[in-house]
Length: 111
Length: 243
Image (tube, chains in turn purple, orange):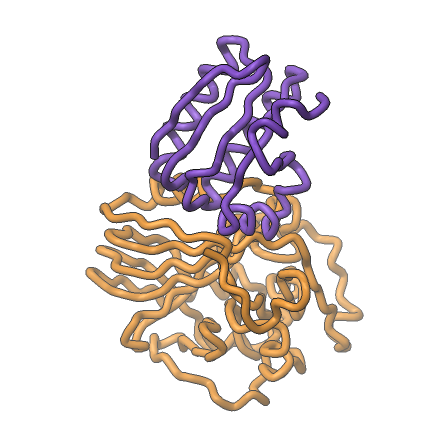
């Protein structure tokens, strides 16, 4: 999995490419943990190039969402492919982590 | 990716035909036919009346692993069970593990696949194991506590074996309802070996995980069940019997 980061307005946009599963999740979790420790509070995950997410990936996103909310921060998801969106819907996580059609829509959403 | 099939028209649910505490206390006789169990799922585990072996339900087929290790395919849906846990299996996602992993590490690895410890999961693990330790139990008379029965269980050890582990993860706060943590039964690919998993060392496996937010619990309509005093803490007995 590739992880690319860019700053847009007040958000840190993190683009994930490939598969988020038990193999790649530890890398993302370490990355996000360091970003939180560095003071980032508004993260937008651009999942437009994410092909697959497993339950292990959901676990990490749940943990990071919890940590961010404790610090009054936000984790938002954008541009999900239908196969990835389906996992969020079946798991019920679409009602926990806000999902947007585009990165722009996520960034401009009210906090 | 998730595969929707039979039972997908309603929310995924874990169906228990009785709470496990009845089994722990030694109520091994209920009038629950497999026909009723199959109405609620095509995947799961359990036992049979008189605790006559371990049950594995895979793809709608019921297998009995007897106390002597013999595996029988049960096609008679009038056969009775005092305890079964089933669901219609359609996993949310899969993971592959392609290296040998000691059991404790494997448990940690599996734990990292579960987003929250506070819901149920159906878990199906298929592949090759360098080692498996499992058990079954011989037919029992009613009212002999499960912990006592477990001391006389048959233990099986296999090496380099291919097969499927099927079962569930149950939250820790529901020990009177279902076995807390992981509860898995094994069936070999050749359908000749199986049992309640005690320990395994996977070498190459594919793991399917299904998140389950709903519990459907039936309470037996029997004299034994309705008149039993369940106030005893069965935690230690359950641990001894299952682990």
